[in-house]
Length: 388
Image (tube, rainbow, N blue to C red; front, top):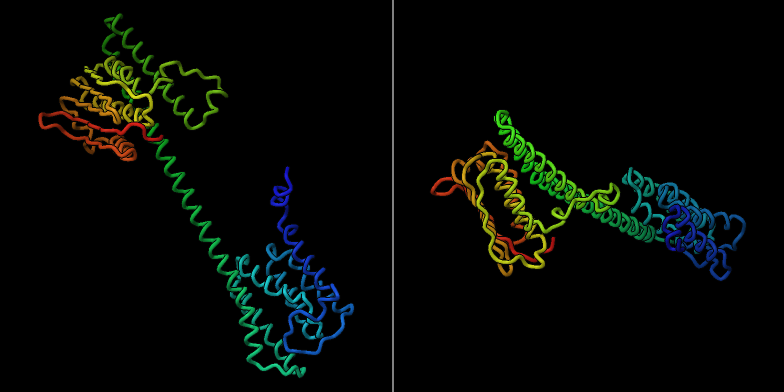
């Protein structure tokens, strides 16, 4: 571990102590004696044991200026008062604005009470210095008070800025989590709804095939195949959320799960056919080598449209057309019969809304609605090559 890392991981008191020690050492250098802050203009006095105590009282509390800002400010102020009343005028007086700045920046509670108490404590110090015959006018004491209020104000501004930045990061984190939850919910909706709908339809059909063992066996095999596809898609989704999932659990999704999503549309169509939905599939053009996330969005459009066809227009003729252009993928899924119920209040509408969001993010066009000749149609133009 490098020294900077050790330093940043150390306790805040340890990190604040060097400033106090440096100020203490500088204040005890003979050349700096009587060359510090002079409030009230009292005659300078040679350093003695009391001077060392006053200097230490001003410098060492800076070690806790962030952990206990009120304690540090009180001790530094007390040392400063002794320093000025005794006439040492030490360089340690610099600790007062540092303590005020730290208190303004790190004090979380009772800020107004602390500021009021410090102001009230300044009054008897100014009166005592004035009565000792320093010759300073009241306006000079007031000016020094304003000078002390400046670092307190700067500290308050730093604290407000830090709080605003923390709030901004919190909002960004919440928005990010909400967006991620929405994305996961959308993926789960697309994957689970389609496969479960197909399995329900297939299982319902199997109930009426008990007198035809061959057809019953085909129906049950279709349910099994659909369940396996659901597991493969769910594992793929888990891989997206946690790339280490497949390695940790020794999963193998098969070659079909690793193909581009748009290349799996035919598998999706065949699955829907086995569920009893007559589907015509047409694919034009050649898929581009790199489509970004367009192939996934195109796959989801077909998946959601076929799911709605199974749920709301089971048995009606459905047509799926996929056209690969130079820089876009065009998808059209139309269903005869009562497929328009997919957009009615009877459904949640979450699937189509999610598709519209997916397509809009990539800068494409999405349309879904009833056809004039009856039925329902979903169209999407998806620019290819957009990043995931």
